[in-house]
Image (tube, rainbow, N blue to C red):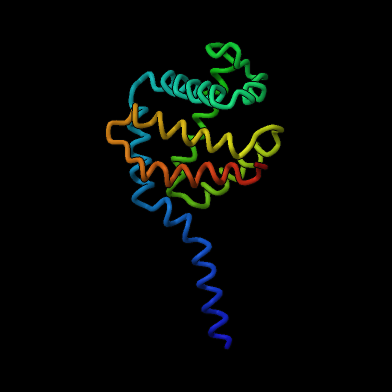
Length: 170
């Protein structure tokens, strides 16, 4: 009986870990990291990152107009201004950090938990906003990546965005 309990415990533990490992496999992580790095080889990559982040946030506000109020303190009304550009860069740096930590599960979990805490502390941020961000990225990345692998990106971004949104209300 004890053996059966231990075996069932191990199966339950593995089943609980399976979706994360299976959905964003080692090969998916390699593909996402390689494709992401290919975007930032240019010497002007900081400007490109800022522009990409700015466009992501503006598209999010277009899809979810209520989001504009959440970005009022970073001056969304002036998207080419310093405050908004700085925030766009912070967003892209967060995405960059998560992608670069894909092969370090412990570091990734800690980073995503920290980001989840930061977003949970902000009134009005919802899981739907992160779902929209995933859709925006799924639409934008094929336009800038030559060999975009939609399955790898979808799997890994589902992992990232779900964990960041894990402490939010619907």
